Length: 265
Length: 268
Image 1 (cartoon, chains in turn red, purple):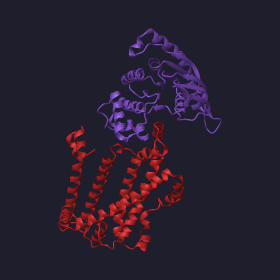
Image 2: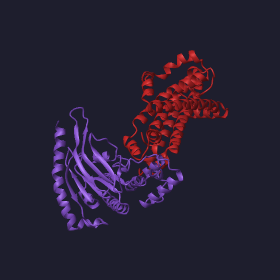
Image 3: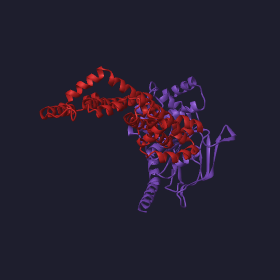
Image 4: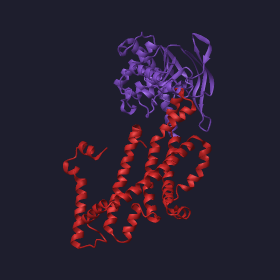
């Protein structure tokens, strides 16, 4: 439900409904006041107004849109590769005991491994170019997708399967027309988890490798190293908003593809 | 279709001696009659229905399903029957018409043709104009109608109904019972109707099979000779009251037995 709807529906008094906005405004005002009155150096903590100025500047000179665009494309690439293979292998594992037995030990062993620890190895193998960023983000997003898909297929409601068979479905039809659609809510939740880690890993990989010298991770590291703290804050703000927008967009797409599945585990 | 059940035994594997769910059920479910299976929870009435529907395999015993017009070639369990489930088992990703048309789709009926059939059936259960709705957008009673239409569209002579109205509120239940009565009187299918409500069993059934607490056996078979078409007004007649009392006495004993069993199981 959107915030607007919630505001409309809510029976809370006006002041209570405005409290979230007031909380943010108050926080920014105190921050601004403290920085100005105490004369805190901008490299330690810039004032919100200064951050806003730099933000406008970075948008105007095109640097922020460019780096954000690059990061977005990398996230999409990693996410799509992970989504495709994750769903494919998850479905195959769910349908074939041979495939699931073959893949089980690998997934069990690799899933708990923090994927970020693969970065040194991947840099040795792939260098610090796009291939490395794509690989690290795709590998990380792959696991939640494959595991959720597999679980969704395995946990398909037995009642629905029996009903389908009773209505004359053969085993192939049961798989295609019941088991796979029944797994969609679970696949969606895997894709959401996958998107979350893709964002993290792309930004992290841009920070560590980044021979391409582009992307939000690269920007953050570079500004941090030269103590342009205003720009670090501006980039962080943009990343936060960007993450929120991506998650909202994903929910929209879910709702568009399978409205019945939204809000289910 | 006549359904002859002989010496049916169902034992669930519990790792030990097994749980006897059905213990030697023998009954003739008459063709084109509505038979109600009545008994305490856990008496195996759902299991019996599922065995007749070919959904469960019995441990032992025989089922013969015979078309009186063509007695030479008996049908396999499930071949000429369709189930309406207690929890409906509608496919949430399909809208009303695609739920109703599911069986036809599986049978390879072309889209235009199966939609025509499905639309007719949806209209006949009173859901016209709801074809494109998602099932989650419908009320409980409307979902029941979808499930009923999905079963009826299969055009099978045997309809198996496993407590389909148990979850409905009292008013909706009355409407659905009348709907089923009307459909039965029009289509004259062989119906097995599982219920734990005595009034429902008398109102709907040509015959009420009262079952015992576990292990499920047939305690008594009671003919319901009330005239058709029937309606809810029957409930106020003395004949209905007599039948109700008679069945109540039979069932009370079994419900007490079932409760005793549950208490013992809980105490262990």
